[in-house]
Length: 207
Figure 1 (cartoon, rainbow, N blue to C red):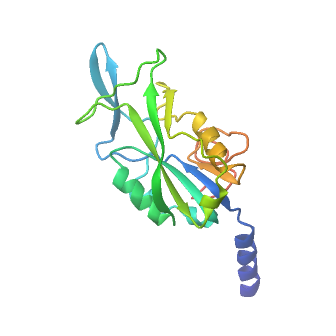
Figure 2: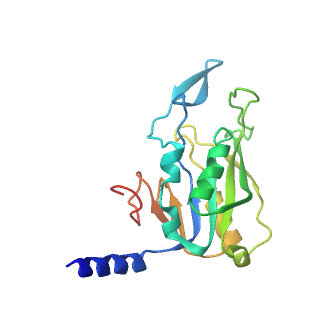
Figure 3: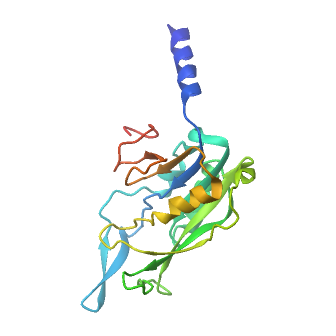
């Protein structure tokens, strides 16, 4: 009985799908439970997140390395506040930080840059870090992918990232096996995992 259980476990492990592109947008937890601000009648009013968050230890403990191919690239969104945490997550997931993959310059529908209240300078951008494992650099398909991305932010869907980022990732790396973690919708060509979509893999808990 014990031997059969062990054999089944090994078989399941062999069948686990591996990805060469991992795109993640973790729901970072803020110590004050306040994440952003909105201008109402000329004044900035802070308001709490409307979705569950994870602390850095929770994110670091995710078994992302189990779904990462030997040659793999990671694109990880972070806020300026959580930059040190993001670097810890990269290492915990089995990757090495390389550079900033993308800088999203947030714009209003009018075309003007967004200006959000900050503790020091006012904010208008968000960064996506790039990390690697193995020899994924040899898979690069295009040297023309730009780091700077100007795109309109969605005021009603907090922290929704521009769709064009996925397209730039595929342009950069080609049609490799890929997954989006903490996804909000299913996109053609991508596997997804998260609590807002029907996940293609089981990574944590019940989803």
